[in-house]
Image (cartoon, rainbow, N blue to C red; front, side, top):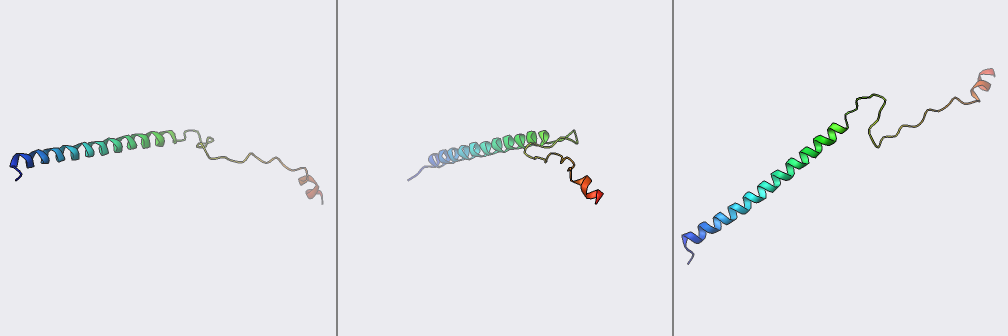
Length: 73
């Protein structure tokens, strides 16, 4: 037969495991939030001519030499 002390010790052990797991989850959530805030801060564009990394804009197209011929016709 299981004594009350054995049940209490098992309860304490399971409670401590649950506490450690919840602490680890909170720690990972805080790290993820800090990383998200850092990335969001880096994405703030202060110069309107700059673009975020990964977005490419095509170079300006120079005027074609054929435009003058079309206007003359």
